[in-house]
Image 1 (cartoon, rainbow, N blue to C red):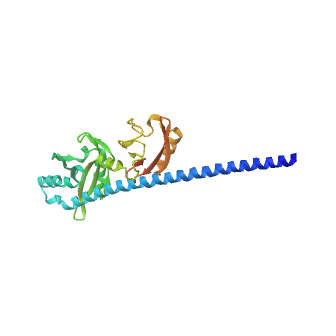
Image 2 (cartoon, one colour):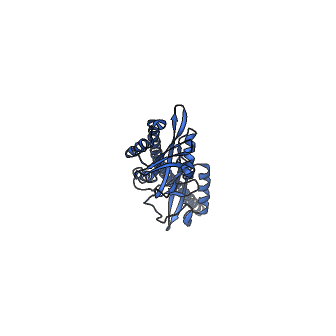
Image 3 (tube, rainbow, N blue to C red):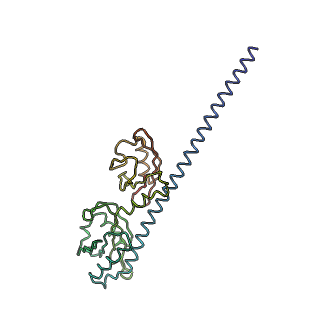
Length: 273
């Protein structure tokens, strides 16, 4: 009888351990499935913001290309050209526009009707000068974000080539406030109000920060403040250098939050969710 009891006891223990192990596996499987579902929703929502931002840039470039086709710089006097630029402002997001011939000088017009004559490309911000030269080579360009002291805000610039016949005669350039991007990022439709998006550079610098965010402190980079562990920082750096998307996390006031980074496909810009 004792042997039988011991045998039954062993069976019960084994059965109990098996149930616990199976329960643990099922629980882990359910947690993984839930996490995969959350990850998939985050990826899908972030992808929609990436598409929206690229559509915004494509639309701005298309408008600029259309304007470039309308302006016949060789046969247009400066006043007519300036008035044409000013008239175009009501239909786009540009806050300053200009034309720079391949001679290296040009004209700029701002939204408040200020006209700058004989502006040298060498005197432009390096980011703008770079895309102007790209346009001289026949390529559309989008500059990096920079702070413009004359406009008093952070901006970036588009530039497209202007042709005289088959030859590039110059570049039409337009500056746009980063507020245009911010409005896209602050649209909570895709996240249903449950996530925040920032725009960062490949080095981790925060270029555009959401007004609503977990950490209210204005950090210069995502690595400041020691909210992201060293191990996760290294993981993020490797992903940014490779131009890959990446999941990570940070801890703030005892709560851990998930991070997702996706390359925008323009310059070295990343969406940071």
